[in-house]
Image (cartoon, rainbow, N blue to C red):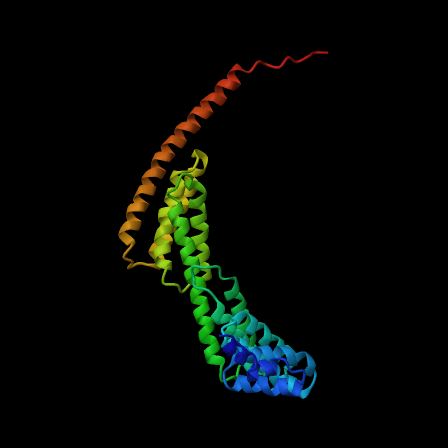
Length: 292
């Protein structure tokens, strides 16, 4: 084992790694890069890049260095190095490819829809920068496909959030979650007007709107019931042949019955209030008028 370790420590790469000759390091880094030994190439580029910075050799070395990180699936680091390359060598023949690779690396690092999408937003910004800078690029269509895929992830993430609020409305404190559902469903439709989920959410909006009204205080119930009936009317206009129509009609009928019962109570309340005011006026003592 000792002999094997000693032999390894005296191998070509170990000798090259210890070299102080930057030309040997540069040639070795490029050699390992071409051979697909990207981790070894990174080690050698780390040693030689500070020495050759500003020279003609630096451009290709910087690009290779970024690509080494990409090839070893260090996508965040690769994106940063490709971005730096573009800023430093924006007139280079490799500038277009570097800007695309920056976007592509961020795209590959973006998470699934059920996770936080902050890095996906960064990928979208990078893709938009690329397609704006290079609208005639051979990679334009590929970039747009990446953009469509990311937008689909955002949509799925938003739908999952809507479903979460919908489930929470059945908890111990439903009021706030009913309201959150209404806002969330409306925002979803606004942000994703062509989504396949909009019909389902429009039906759930009627259900949630009615539930919100039923759980409201006396003085807010009428307004919220009318809102729920408005959601039903909007559903019928948008989806006249929906499979959810039967359920919406049941909920609408329930809301109308609730509104009728509430109207009776409201009228009785107003009558009692008027009677109390009248009695208060009758019992009010006359003001004494001082005659001078």
